Image 1 (cartoon, rainbow, N blue to C red):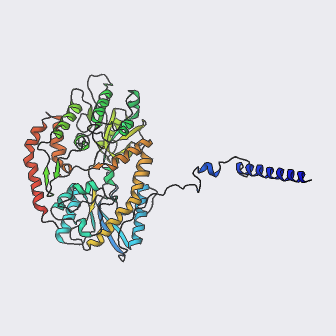
Image 2: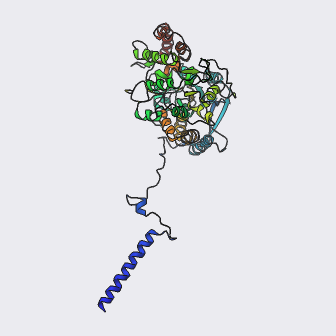
Image 3: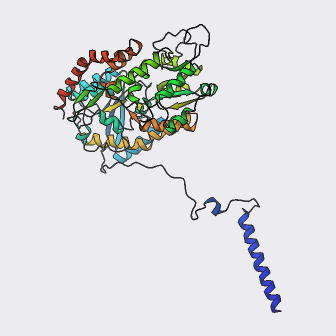
Length: 504
């Protein structure tokens, strides 16, 4: 009897163990599901998806009693968006992110955002100057093209970040490189923050045609970037391999395939900027000076770029300077730039140098394309540097009625834009809606993290965009060109330098 009882107990125990094993495999309906241990091999709770970091500025807990914080902005949205505020949510990603950002800040600081729209950059600049000269309280911020803002700052029209007492320019919601390069005697007047989303859109990118890369059996440009081997040499060689007289007329026209398409102000000057060369620098005393004397690297880069762009095998077709017979702009938004879109859409260029904010115009292109940073001068160069065309920034007048309030709101706008509008612009709008592969999104991160504005582009737009770039199409005697223009350019810097000590 004792043996029988032991046997019965053992059988019951075995049955129970089998039942438990069956339950572990069964989801209640007979279908196998992974065990908790399989879902989380490390044991414990299954990890949740990481929440995005929330950026919080170090600002006082204050209320402004319903104050209307006013901005005067441009109606031109080719380089946009420019809005400080929007009326309602519309379903547009960026619009709605601005709406949510503003509702949060209006509630937190008890302010109301208002904006006035003016059509024309010159008119905006004149509006700003007249307001300061008259000492009238017309706006808290006014949108200015960065080159206008720079000269107005040098003349004493702009409020510095230091006078507000509440703007921490070391925070990630500011572009530190661009803020520092425009600083004057240690004071910061041009505030490139994440509120200024068009700052990202004015970065220069290289698009590449995936079909042409595949047809010609070329190296994968993404792999070159990731390995650090994406250099001028690789770029020029790939451009030459793409050249083809498609219509067989013996001339390279807008009906043939070229190495790179662009317009002159979006390509030649990229070379010295992406090589880490600055034509204008600041000395130990904070004074601006030309960086020409003894700058052999600059001459080397200029000569190399010209030799390849316009040499025996001309790899570059400019839809603004070379003759175009077969294409006409389809609309007035981008004007002649639309010809570049059409040529690239027609597989007539291996590469296309353009502003990031123009990429959405290619969303209907049939052939797949990728996005790249501009190449390095050589593999020894530490990082890829993306030339930034500047930005349309919102500047505060020097006679602001309450600089502290201005600083608090500008800092709050910048930080909250990092939380809302920038993810909408970068992650959703650019990376998800307008790019065609994961690598393009990775390349955008490289470009945004290494965006740089060359001060010579700001101060000497006519000389750099005109005289210097024209020399690429001329004799290419850059040493002589520099010698002829140094005195004139230095005179401009001397005038700026003479005004710096008087700045508040």
